[in-house]
Amino acid sequence: MKDMLYYTEVTSPIGPLTLFSSHKGLMAVKFANAEEAVPLFNIWALKVRGADFELEESASALKEAMKQLNEYFNGERKDFSITYDLEGTPFQKAVWEALIDVPYGKTASYKEIAASAGSEKAVRAVGNANNKNPIPIMIPCHRIIGSNGALVGYGGGMNKKIYLLEMEKEQMKLQLETK
Image: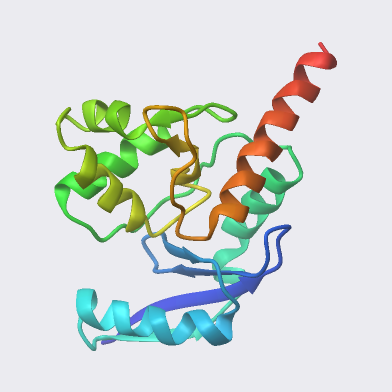
């Protein structure tokens, strides 16, 4: 019996996003429309899951993820409560867990994430794990910066990283003003 995987495309202020999930949870968020993202996801899924899956478009299967992303972009959500179905090494998963702990509107350095993931000297490995983060935005790799405070690399492009950081900073400022 084939494992069912689902996808849907959503619009966002940073362009189209395509979401992918299994029955276990959200697997990926891609910075692309479905036409571009689905073939790449299929290649990845074949590598990690083998040929025993079927991919089907289903907005209803991804309804909660879509709702939470919409709330995030509207400034109504700071943390996500989605179940993930992550494929990665134990170190990558430790890095992704450390990314989730970086608070909304704040940043952390690669070195700080390396320490949180249990390997203070693994700064480059953290960069590689960050780059392989399958669920950007929700697992907030955009909040990771260089030790000198410089904005460095982002899989979705620096314009998206800057937008997300500025949006969060603005929402935090608005929240403080209304208190």
